[in-house]
Image (cartoon, rainbow, N blue to C red; front, side, top):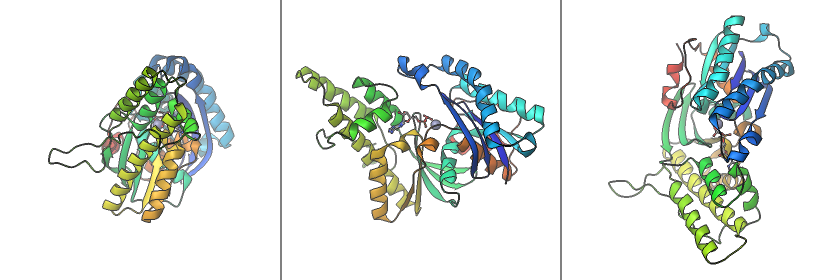
Length: 347
Ligand code: KG4
Ligand code: ZN
């Protein structure tokens, strides 16, 4: 049961955690949301600088709270891809330095593999194969999880990620940033049947629609046109709660349909959800209801493990270390990397 110190700096959270196998001994997250809010999105250069400022404290707190010494740590890990390169480099360089100085194995971890591993923290008895619906600010994927480092991406978005769609729709409705939690809260008081919106199907050249791929840019444009038309009719204030509820229900329906179809086609009886949008109450409700009816088990991690954190990175690293997978010190940060290439990070 390896114990790992893990760092995560791929976007706008500076995070450190100590994880033993599938148990979190400590998990510290310093969010930069307030720093980026005035800009309506993450400013990469500011994110890197803030990671440098926060990393020392975050890491020291994680070690203290875990109550471990360096003798207890079997490896040091950091997210190395995908993400903002300047931001990734902060955690990666810190992890490499510590591993060198303390003479411990170093592991680079794929950020999306971390989101998958959040489910093992939630249910330590979980075992592959299962389907993971990964819905974050940068990704929307349906992943067949076959084992440690063994993944097949069966479905993806053709344009915007689900979280990106929430953020863009919130912006065009004049709401704040990040949009997901704001829309989620507003949707609770709105009527989802007021504005019918398009789900965004991907047409296939041979006819019909792709069963697992999604598209959210058409939905975003439909909301934009709707808002413009309501404004042209002089409707003020905008019915933001009904708009939010209609948009959220459309996203939730679209993701639920594709996820269940994929799970049933591949004979997978467990679906786990990862990424920031897994926090969405509409998605939780739709997917849980439909999956229960179809006899499929669904697992949603608690909120703290849905959004970016280092505990999920530590859990993935502990499993790789257990399998003898170790990264070279020459491993670099990469802005893009497919999940199928995860094993290229080791050996
Ligand atoms: O996984 P995450 O923390 O960072 C990435 O790796 O992208 O996801 C952030 C995304 C943002 O787009 C945010 O708006 C969205 O997750 N999000 C939500 C909710 N909470 C966060 N989207 C919908 N409903 C929520 N409750
Ligand atoms: Zn993430």
